Length: 442
Image 1 (cartoon, rainbow, N blue to C red):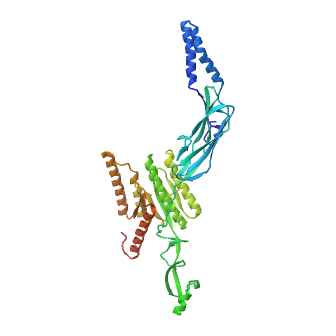
Image 2: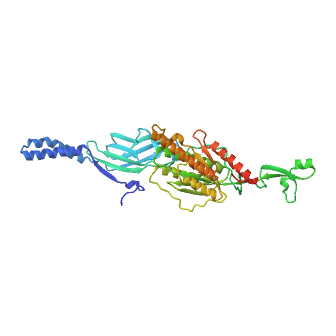
């Protein structure tokens, strides 16, 4: 049975000849051919040492046993963190050993070199080799596989083997702190932090009014009743939870700038989701692009980790170009959900998707991540024209959202998501007041 990646102990190995071996064989047998053809046996004596060296080198084959494993100090990190690890390699007898950790994604080697590899002098195992990596991009990343090549001193054949798989590292996006959240359109009748338009049990004061039959005795304000010489009750707004669905634009290309743009959008989505989950809201995620991820709205502590798992899957797809992930379950956005779109507006299908939810009756907003600082400066007329075309296209998408009734705000690299959230809150509050007052929504 052929070895697989899930069976590290039976991985493929191969014998590799030393580059000197073919040269020695050609020199030795060439001298013999020339000696026979010319009838001069002394020429054969010149090639004999090369054949002897080749024969001796072939008898000293590489070690029969190679083993090794990779240990990391942590299994999760945040973007920019340093990850320390150790490679342990063992073999039988004395051998010259080359070790390399290859196939990693999402990390950058820091030490010992730009390539995580070692060339060890003749010696015996086991040997422990420390190394350091830096988490470059968020996602679930494999550190690749451990390859070992060993040969005996003076030997001309080496044994090369993939001895083990490196562990997987979870790299979380850097957090963005938000002090405010967006108000859902129709809060649910579950205790939360959003004020409902109706009046009832809660902690936010509305008014004082005379007692009516059916009022709870606990709502009576005894100090006001004593002054008014009749029972008065305190009326509050009930606090409810809301439903929020974050629509993440997961369109990206192979360019480094595109991956950085996706990372900024993911950080903003995670910041919005975190602040709503802390408010006991139900939060869902819908990522569309090269990879599709769907998490129905959920609340509580478990929802936080499930949402983060989905975001890490999007980050993994950005590094692994062969990775494709499709949503298997049926996508059904609850009718009372506030749809928050987070995008760089590079995709031409994102704005129509957001407008679809607006026409379906959802309260919909858009947070546009500004990536103009990532665009290459126009050093020539062609580059300048390309930059202007991209900015014009983004402006067209922005205007289409505004005309369709989707309030938008821009997340700048300097300002962050906080001012964008505050701007959207003001626009949503103004729209709701206009609707309550009988004025048509703009």
